[in-house]
Image (tube, rainbow, N blue to C red; front, side):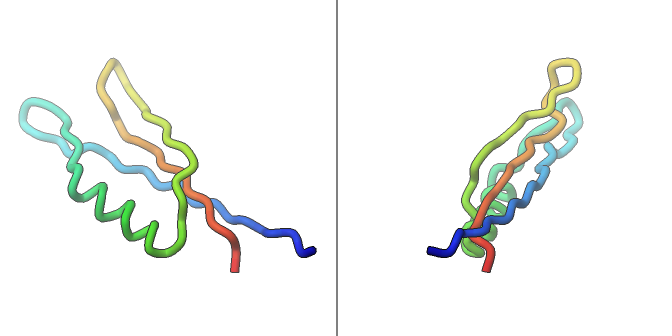
Length: 67
């Protein structure tokens, strides 16, 4: 039986700067995540980066079987 080989991809989605705060653009994040799903990537973990209590970005790590 052949061993399956997997590959990983990590992306960072940063919040957008607004006049008074940083704000996540959920629609744009969903577009990026859905595109990766269509390519066969499955989300395996997330990690939020915060500086002084403000979200600076979210790292999403994906995995899929290597072709």
